[in-house]
Length: 413
Image (cartoon, rainbow, N blue to C red; front, side):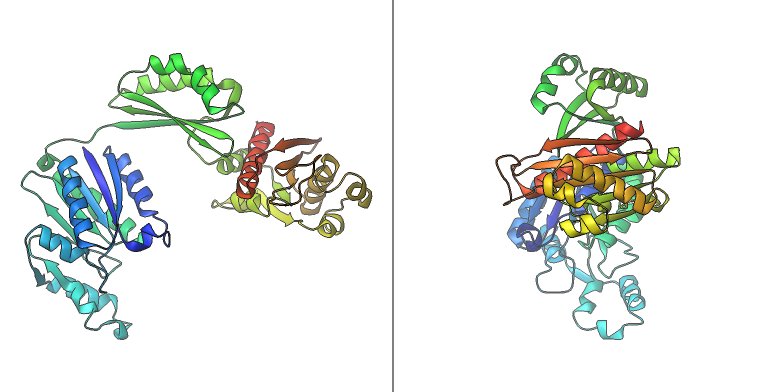
């Protein structure tokens, strides 16, 4: 069974709003064994929407649109779909009752535009929208294919997918004429080898994979996620293939499951009953933001000092003035003292420190842009390493953050 997503709205195409809906829907569909064939973004334009819907229905069994269901003039999805399916709008007493209840404490919201929300397509199946005013619409074609029209507001769409769309698809799967596939994904993360070299290293392994199993390379910030995707393959065979892959990349292996690196670090710290703090210069708090991103991180992440100016390095972290005068802020000696200083200051078992030149200015012949020193302080020793991480500011700081976490995870392991 295959599906397509159509996101509707000018704001998506001018970069004003980032499309997070598609990622959420894709993940939920995949969990149900529904293969996502294509994602399309279109303008608030009737012809564009109509063409996208027509083409999607010609290719797949399920089409889901999001956006364009509000009460304002630029929200045209409902009208376009009525035209496409040759139907008219009729008032729904159920939707009207829901909308009035929704805004019971905000009567000012109820006006002639809001009232258009309880006009629904005569030929559509109307599904409850528990948290919003726009009705969820579904058309079931004679062929059994389904088209859902959902709001673009992320939290409304997410609840609609969980509570209405996926259960409806499950109930109607026999009418659609085909069953969901069993899709299994296995992901491992590696670091320390170029993507092209890794592909050559795994060439024979890829050639021996069954036709229903695919290997994808997903590089980001100096790491590569290797994802095995298996369609209707026995679980035991998938486990064996993953074991073969891990054995082949063991030299560069970082994580053997599909979790964010910072979460893997946190889980390991929690297993050990240990804590960590960070001292950041060039990364400007990116390490801190990642390490406290997940619920429960207070158990192992205790704090950070963003020491951008040398006076903060010296007065807060205890970096010696002689170190700054002789070696400079971007040096092995400085990051060692930063890491040891924040570990002492926060009272943690481990600490990470970063200091570098992220540009676009400030580079020298000895320390060009992209030079980053990172230190890891442990209960017994302090490690430090110098990296050269590119020329672009965000690229440098993202890569430095990732290198810091990867090395920490290896230390903890």
